[in-house]
Length: 377
Image 1 (tube, rainbow, N blue to C red):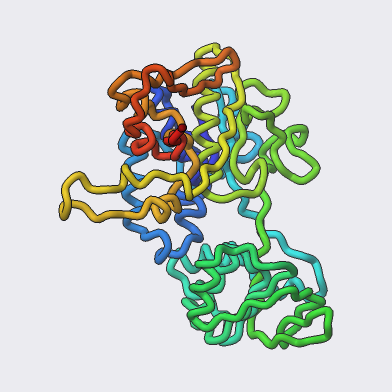
Image 2 (cartoon, rainbow, N blue to C red):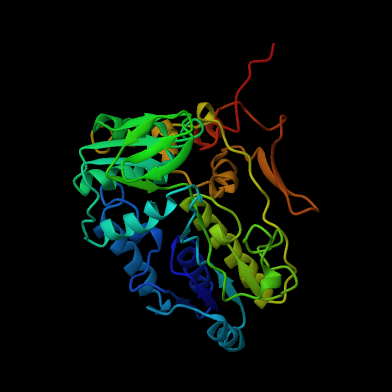
């Protein structure tokens, strides 16, 4: 297996494929694995030592790497010839820049964050304006303060898409967030809005998204929007053994890329075992109010810290493992619960009312709150 891109999506696929027994080689253009996890996420949000441990864990199971290896069309052709299947997971690293007057003065947010994470200190002055108030924009604001800025203003044309906790963090540091603000032009004085206002700035940094660099792939594989054209199984349309995931197919979160990598690995495994490929069933989000706290309580008082299940849900990456965990099936003392497999590949857990004694163990142990008890008169 060949995986082009050593970011979260590519590494997720590499991990899963290696666990299934396949030989995996990851081709990474950078000198270090991790993609944006390593290149742009502030260390205060993702400590470098923890990330390094995770990367070492992936390498320890036998995943091979080719670092400082930027794939071009010629190398891509050779990679396809040398491997049974290929997963394209190069992410999106071409910053989007709006060509309004003075756009050449803009600093690209992604490049700025990469310099910060590499230990560099870009000269940006004391007053900084950030165009874009998404989560990446909040990272740029933090980076600006790290680089010595004293006054940072983030603007957006719509309500900021960043998580509230990220907004609260930067505003607690003194940053201002304004919307809706429409940019007219950039000058040596700062950013000029369409309302005629001048927001003075020594530097203006733009962070409104990135696009993938797919110059190595045949143009027929790329959509008009510059994304890989894939089906529901992550296969490139018209190609049997080429898959594409993450930001190469559509903009998304790092957790989306990790999930795509897992799904693509499963599809590749089926392909190499001559099994038919079927799209993974999409699961509905379980409301926090239904999450069970039973699994988060210590068995003996004082030995473990009690963690609120609703807070723990923030770490969930929607892998769906909890949806089919068999815990209720195994815990039912009367054997009243059974698991039924359907013809379409779906499944259902059912309880036999003639056998159930209403003990409530299933309701207490289910992490998703699927089971419940009702008093019937």
